[in-house]
Length: 356
DNA sequence: TCTGGGGTCCTAGGACCC
DNA sequence: TCTGGGGTCCTAGGACCC
Image 1 (cartoon, rainbow, N blue to C red):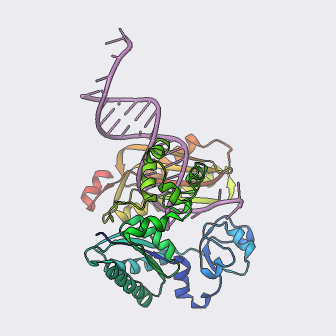
Image 2 (image 1 turned 60 degrees about the vertical axis):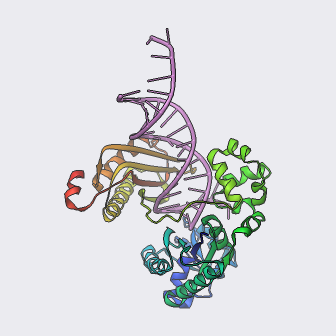
Image 3 (image 1 turned 120 degrees about the vertical axis):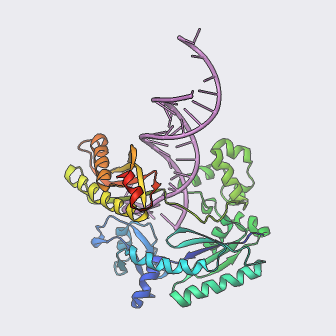
């Protein structure tokens, strides 16, 4: 029997801040962009549970959070620090794993099949892991355990905050069936609406649907969702996962059509992207820019080079060309982004010369 | 709820080659 | 030339996740 666990850190960014500023603990606190007295453009990244009591949520526009709770503690995002804490957590999690797959800064799947021979053993080991994360690092997490990734993930959502939930193989369908269809992994806002219009309000409704109809309507995604709804997921915990693209994007403080301001942002982001790429040892082939206009419409424009490159200058050059070619003149931009992709790995100086 | 920044995967048409 | 089919690359767009 396969046994898979998902370890998910609770309100991770704010929890990290509470570690180094214990005085904010138990007070409503938010990590996100600067609210600027209610004029800020960003969103709440993470809210602790004290803040959630007032309705503050991640993804909420920061000015709205500020309107609701002016006297909450608003902290800027310190990504490097969270990354450092994440590394500590993940190193610990790995010691419990046959196979380890980090899915984001605060989440990882582990396969524990060979270490835990039954459900009780899995539960015991994960309790121990959870306690160790708390004792050694000082951070709370939630853990979902099941016989596949999908159900482990859904179980961890149920376990939050600071809990553990085990869903046995023969309980999976029942466990999922009562949840609203929008809670199913892979169902976002758009898909939820469509599924609900079809009459599939709960995951159970979707599980009982005719798979042929789902495939006709949603192609291979329909088949996948049908399997998910029935608690089936054969996918493995993926150990060697490679980065496919690196990008930066920036929202202007005010929408702008000023070419100088925009190309300056493009140059800065290109430089950052180039540095990150170098750090990771990649050479890129494709440059993509993202343009978001005032009305939130988005355009992506990309160009493939005839060669692979490691040159940050080249990113800026191509990105600027794309901007000049495609940006509608006079149209105000809210956001601009630069991304590189289609990597080849290079190792060492010698091979680097090939790309220079 | 007028909405950030980091990503991934899928689809689909057209170019181009054999 | 009225015409087949497979494979791969390029580009654009959309949905989703954290």
